[in-house]
Length: 438
Image (tube, rainbow, N blue to C red; front, side, top):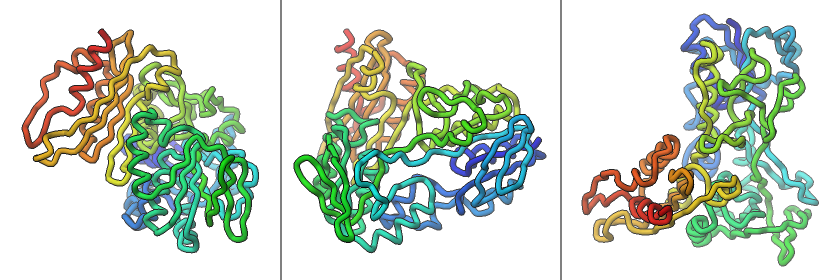
């Protein structure tokens, strides 16, 4: 079998490895427009902060060679000829029996008047962008970061670590991490960020951006920000141009339309990663999900179905998310209360803040917000913030939401306790939810 994979990100890498494992004789060609692949795309901000080196974030260089996968770097696929079952790249034709699309996403640039490309940078998963930033950052001393999602927050921390002052972080919405946190929870993180030197400007209305000598001037209704550099971190959109050119259907969110086996409208073409139209596991509604973990999962599922036939359904996403902000861990699963209401759910929520254990044992505050559907009496969302380790609780919440465990049952589960270790930090929130539901 001949398999072609378009895209060398997490989805393409995951699929390539799984295809080789399942079919030792398959001929696999992987195409990437980038000059380097096989790195962890979430980590460039950490390199820029001095917490890692570029060499540290690469997968072993022999990953593809050991698996006999032909990698074509700096190579753009310009056409997919579905009737001939081949693609065109670099003026050459490559036949395929099965094709996997995983070209990722491209930065989404807001229509702000005055953007001219000078001293304006976008942040993407392309390692070339990260390397360019590393060269540019030492030349300047102040910045405005537009977009307070995960990348914007991480880049703000990276710039502060590199000595930038001031660092402005702007967003048109009312809180940071708006896709993952409700305002009442986001305020706890925002307080920490301001204490550490991030100048947050939320509900921002940017009238225009002007050039100012060698720098930039960000014009707001009530003030003007003079900075050396503007970073645009306002999200991304699925990279679907090649698919559309080939006549492959896209969905309501703009991603490539796939079925539960991640098969596109062409039965010999599958898709995975940021480019697909995803759906949530809670209501089944369509969504975008541009995360490396989801890309890896969907790449693996698509590869299994591509080789073995449609036997492994993809169940969707729980919108899981985690980030470290100045030693405060933030983890979320499922819907925020705001999003749940937008989707028409009748929800109740409980918010609690308490030490994980007694202060004499070094306990630190554990903030949690739980959101439950009144009709099904199950969790549909969880938000957690603490300086303590939170991965275990986040995983428990993920499993509880995925399996639709009743809140009443969760509140009655037997959990361990020790004075030095503490008790289940969401137990009080679950008990409060039960009262609200009754």
